[in-house]
Amino acid sequence: MSSRHWYVVGAIVLLAFGLRIWHITTLPPGLYPDEAVNSGNAIEALKLGHWKVFYPENNGREGLFMNIQAGFLKVIGQNEPWVLRLPSTIFGTLTVLGLFLLVYELGFVSKLPNRFWLATFSAFFLATSVWHIIFSRIGFRAIMAPFFLTWGLYFALLAFRRRWLSAAAASGLSLGLGFYSYIAFRIMPALLLFYVPSFWKRKDFWHIAIAIFIVAVVAFLPLGYYFLTHPSDFLGRTGQVSVFSSASPVRDLAKNIGLTLLMFNWRGDGNWRHNIAGAPEIFWPVGILLIIGAALALKRRSLFDWLMLGWLALAFFPVVLSNEGIPHALRSILMLPPVMALAGSGAVLIYQWLTRHWSLARVKLAIVIFFAALLYQAWYGYFIQWGQNPNVPGAFAANYVSIARQINALPQNEEKYVVVRAGGVMARGFPVAAETVMFITDTFLPEDQKAKRVEYLLPADYEARKSSLAGRHVFFID
Image (cartoon, rainbow, N blue to C red; front, side, top):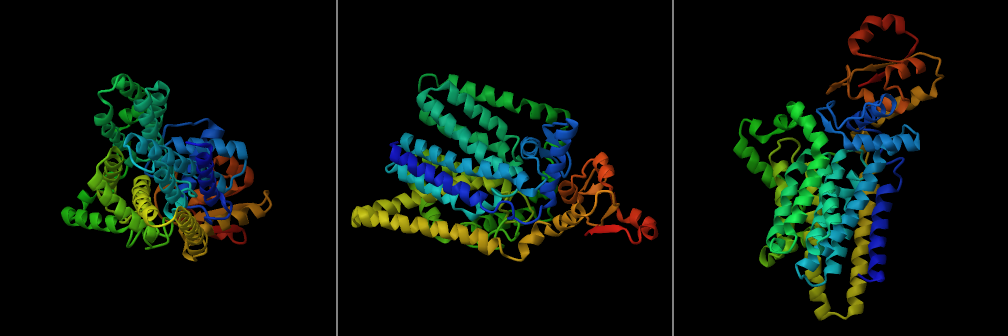
């Protein structure tokens, strides 16, 4: 690529970062308990030295993301929600860059025309995707899954094409670390099989393949050993949400397939934490381009097309085999890169048609207007439609953060009591809802609670001591 092309890539990455970092200290509001549980693990790692590859609380989570969050807490030194979310912002932004490089490289190997535009459209669609922006600003480990897979596939392609062992090692590391991201990632390295027909006759193919495999296994070994010694944690709550646990698995599976296919252009996730509730996951012009790109892929069947269709299919299975909250934007997060790449392919087809009927100046103007519309929709969709909706604070337990702020405003030498009446999964003797307040007040550890004179009570304990707590500072987490 020329230097001018790299300026375009840099501009897209900066735009992606801007959409993911702007007002990160205030949006999303609150701190959802599932995010706060991560903070408890991070604080344990920092203050007690309990670094783990897997944290069993809250149905179990691979530990890499929490350990990274611990590093950010250590460096920044503030117990604020945005610190826990900053790693997601970085992973999300770098996924945009990774998708550009992967699509550009695939375009070269597949001998596709206008591969720079193919990569540019794909990356820009991901950069301005409200779906991706939302999860790039929440402290969930799932945002790492598309990052590691995109970069793992890019480095593998680079290694096979240019016979670079260093790229093979980078691919193996990315794919191995991907197992620490999200349970749906575990079947995704099978996508490497799509490279075999294009490269297996080349010199050093098996050396490259073995190098990728060995590095991936070494990276996975600590987590693999943990699962070997704790087999019940391997599937976590997968069995609880499996479609096969329902009374009518065949009917529910068919329903899940239909709802998931319709989520892109018709009706998306209804959870305000994941989406503008019920809105399609993709802006409608990009959704139309996705249909065009998928149809073109089925007809053309290059390496790019097979890989993206296979990626979409593999990422589709974990979603439809679950039976909770379908359509589910979070569980579908691994579909984001191939969706945007196929839409990029559809955009290139339109671009080619325009260049045959319009002057180059008119085509460039149309692209600028189109990109401006996408940028405006991303800004308006996230910061106005979603960010200013009254349902969003409740989706992120903003009232729990408010309680924590009130506690922090009180003198440290005064006794404060927090009664945890909320239900949900228990962690360390209390429902996970308590961990939002624990994080903001820095009272996760018993010694910190004692130093700051904050005591957490279950409802039964509060009822037994209710008379003695009259006139004290008592807060309720409902």
